[in-house]
Length: 406
Image (tube, rainbow, N blue to C red):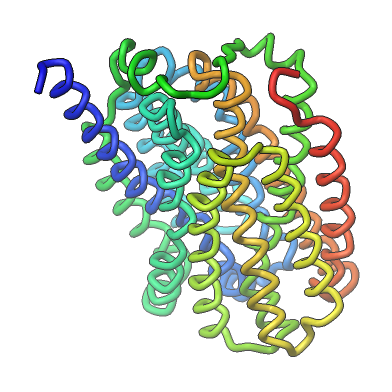
């Protein structure tokens, strides 16, 4: 075996280490997906409404997304290690100081704004790093990396529920902040970008289409960017709305217990996690447009089923919410993979940082809308006609606007 072959083989092995490390990092960061377990205890603690209890989650996800353009530029300039350490510090400050909150608005500021900004800074690191190491199969690599974020509630929901029972919801924020800091800083030392020649040589061989490389300003002049952004925002609206109301919907509409609702959130996390590599592999093999349209068809079917048939019906509840969580996970892979395919790897960190602002809009409007509709109509069911209509808009937008090179 030649020296060059040995170098490529060693490098190829190391890039899978990057995927494993990214998976573990995202497993910690994905504790946000278990936030719905906090809502009823916080409502009881402070005598607040459903809309108010959703504020920290809503603001967290918005801050998470809107810090990404800055984080993307930061990681391109300073590398993954320093960016991860900086983000970890913000995450820890947000979670730990949130434990001293006296009301929902202080919790929203500390956990939502500070913790969300830290998570957004940190989240971009494993995705950007994996995309640079895998020019040949970016969908699969990104999907496996963010799998940890989706599967996180499988571990964190029962753990959070148990901690809340033992020490209350506020102290639970403190202990989780400490754990996240230790894990993220420890794994930051394993992350680095590949050498320039690795990203442009052997692993690019066999790629069927000429690679397009656009900077942010050029990307913003394409119709595909706006189609992708709108589709991503709609998918995140429906997905984060579902994540935020899964437990209370199960308790109030389906009439299951708090324990059963926590177990359901953990089960939904499996689908959210599996959606990431599944949609990533689909996107590597099929056109992103086809995958996106398929996703919106599933969202439409799930939302109509939940609206019409879910009252006191656990089967419809489990199937409908599983599909919504699956597609949220799918879009969290589909959007960055499409960004890599359509706009290139050279400016990927900054480009995806702009695309993911759609995530923030969906995170802001989805939970806010569901909470307001619940308080206005008296039931979470009223959110799903809106989701169904948006799914139709999303499918049409993908059909008309999403085309590589346009």
